[in-house]
Length: 558
Image (cartoon, rainbow, N blue to C red; front, side, top):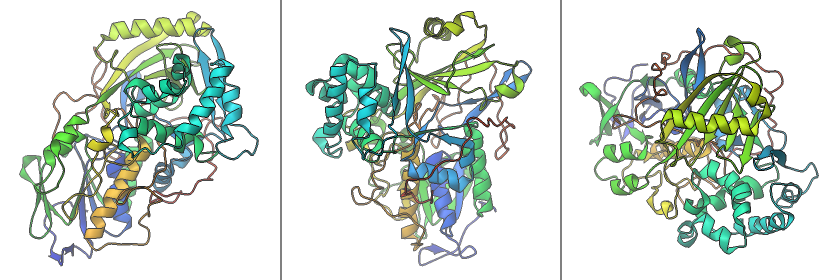
């Protein structure tokens, strides 16, 4: 289906084959979700993405290795069972089978000081929330017993906070913990284990309101809400390639390598001007790009203050990738406390190393959130720091040969989720009919996560379609939350938040530039839009069927 040319309108609704046209600017998860909702409601979506592929902050690139190539994800992402919108999107894309979802929350934790392990594991006992957390906290040996008891009380108190109260949002999570008897050890070994990964900020710099959201919805609202899931395929295969297929099958248009330069309201709808001067006409527009790009594309009369979008700022994440000649880690993922290392993921299968690499080789990705202290350090310094730390933490790493070590930097991984950030986040609806905003930075009530991205896209599509006279029965309904916003379910827990966008060298008005390769490395190969990711071996041990116990409130049935 062509995205070019005009559509005739009648009473504000396009009549191109009886379908209104919605132009979605930005092909990340928010834009993908918005375009799919538009297609499923009978509109004609045209999805524009400045990069060569869809996926935004959750995609992959290829990197050569020993005569073959590996898929390198832009960040390591996990999600929770309560991520109903994100899991619904996976189902809509037909890729749920490419993920694993734990039957119950089970996070293994390495205590760096003693080199011993403990775990945060949900009990099998049929205890209602929040009592289901008691056995996990009491058995968490990273803390003295007295700190475990105090942590249980603090969790209950956090769950009662109103995250939308300006006084709560304006407070820091670290300050609240200190005032409520949480030791420095408890903050580091328990609370920051959860919130640094989800909010991409240390407790002292994180919004109390967003931390309360993480704790309440991810851990307290349902006994199984915090069960973790992760991809068993490259993110490009899971998100971008699957979205191209789904949108094309639904009659939509996907245009990659296409930058939007201006959005203008007309007497009959909207015009979107592209690089080169081409103009697309539409009945509705969803702007689903990062805040600085969005600020430059806001049409007159939107009612959105561009200065607030720019004031959201950014928080970086780095990833240190290590390929060993033998197994070093014996679990799919591991959290570490008391060390520069935060989370470690085994990507041997999902990267393709199991197929193209030497037999027995293992690919580990170290995901380092809140990476202000590391993001500008030379690659050699980072390699030395983290290689030495891995040798200290894992005896197997001392004897293993490192076949490859490289660093990827996501300078603009998330907006800065600091105290007071709620007041800077606009709702999806704007002052203009047919024009809406989407992205993790909009006011979803969530941290910058994959779940928040999907929910924002659904909300933006709903707002846009409503002004076009579309009110189909499959449009999602909210399950709480302020008027005009999506409901209050937490999800999309990205260890590198839904997050993880490399710094652009020359940002385009519609999207940042592609991910940068490590220093001294050739530019990664860019697969053509819509081309499936390289075939990958399927691990019978890890690829499991998700047990569905949560109800979707996000627009796509789970």
